[in-house]
Image 1: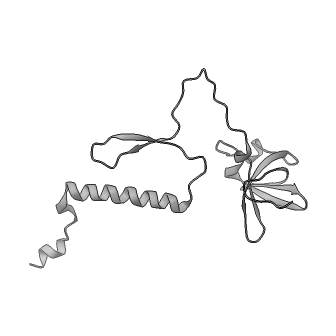
Image 2: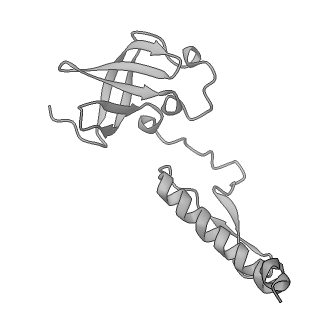
Image 3: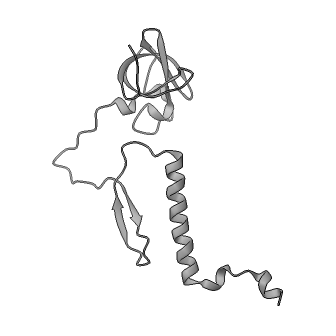
Length: 151
């Protein structure tokens, strides 16, 4: 069986460490589930969520060039069902608009975590916007004191 990213497999927990679990997924292949991929909630003690010899569904989230297989238990879980009787909560986070009226819009939460590069790009864009707002509001703040002393 040729594995590819996105496949759902059944794995038997063969080892537990403080940073994750190792699982046998059959055909002589094994993979690792990082502690952050064990449950939907914060995992303080991994032993509260899995036990050795448990057989669980896991999603293949990465296959390294060296053949190492990264697995996720939480991404293989069925989506949580929402009770229609509950008040509908907004999912996502508020995001301040770039204009200066201090208004907010609601940004949808992403299903997959952002890559580091995406987070850095978003941070840089937000930082640049805030910096340009500051420069517009106080143009004297960025002037060099060296230039004033050189006269």
